[in-house]
Image 1 (cartoon, protein in one colour):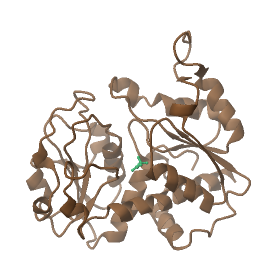
Image 2 (cartoon, protein in one colour):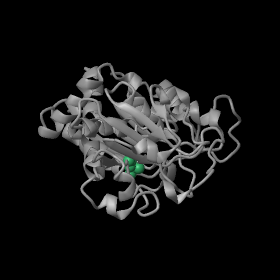
Image 3 (cartoon, rainbow, N blue to C red):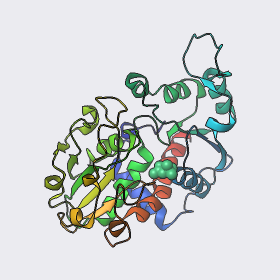
Length: 316
Ligand code: CP
């Protein structure tokens, strides 16, 4: 694998999931693979899970790790080509990416959507520019439109906990007063599409995701109907794609409660975290036996390890 930007970079998803599950059983089996190599982790936005799990996975593979909060500590980076840099951006990505690429064998980047201009966000300019100028593999640690490391961990978690050959997986929009990106929801759908699952997506009208991500997913606007018989409920808030970046409603009746989970087929609850308790999901669900959120977050280490291993094999 040359880069890890989306599921499109994965040649064999089942093999990648199996690799993650193997890494969990034997974390140091490939400890020599990253020897004398360095990964740079660049964060334009906050993180808890992605930062720590990716660092840990890299260390398990023997990689040296350099982490930088570029959004806080670095020079402001200009991404556009051919502009007069007379604003607040002190450095161009052409130099920055090339320089970081000269220090690091792999670069991981987190850069969220700004939710102002859909075309700009969906063009993923930060990742495209680093890919163009760094000349080393680029790993997506959550971009404007995708969060593949999370989605791989989600696939692993569903594989581990499914009790039916073809489980029903429901992605449910959750209420939130803030505008959040569509990246996790987009990516979850994109990764569920090649999986052997029945994918249902439920959200209020006006929150339809970009059709390129929905794929085989069936959209049902009635949350209760969508949850019927679900084996997994994946909760996530996102802002509107059509009315880009807007919060059209924060209707509390969309919060996941035990009463909602009772509609499922003894379903499990998943969320990528962080989440606001009793606004998106009730304590009774998160603290009860249905919740997989900790197991899911723990799998972030193993999804990162599986992806980094593929990248390192590609460097050999
Ligand atoms: N799920 C996830 O990406 O968590 P962080 O934002 O804390 O990294």
